[in-house]
Amino acid sequence: MNFRKVSAPGAVLLVLVLIAAGHAEALDLNGAWASDADNCGKVFARQGAQLGFTDMSDVYGGGFIVDGDQIIGKFARCRIKARKDSGPSVNLIAACATDIMLSSVQFSLKELDANSVARLFPGMEDMEIRYHRCPAK
Image (cartoon, rainbow, N blue to C red):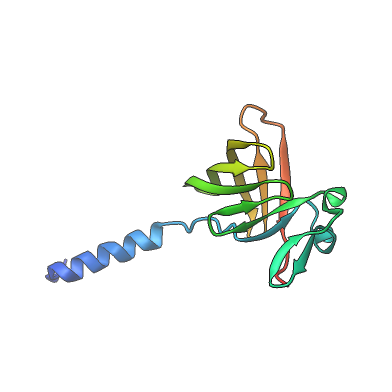
């Protein structure tokens, strides 16, 4: 076998490239998510430059909006405090506020495909809610 000498900076670069190649990308949650992809226009509406909820969004299954470290629902606003990605799953701990209370909420999501996730409920294996990413408008 013929081995060539690799300089220290070259070896470090090689290791970083190998690590990056083997590292799966974190699930991108940014965007608007509806429980029924066909109802995106009935759940979300632009209000100026901001994306928000229609008055009757909950009638059409509802959804949520993720913008960076914020999860926005029709009646609550949450800030992601911790995130752990594990393959196609992500666990989030968020501090949430409604008009009447503050709470800490755990979200467990599993990527189904690039534009679909399932919200899982730990301790209730058969329960999940599927959400679909709505096209950006």
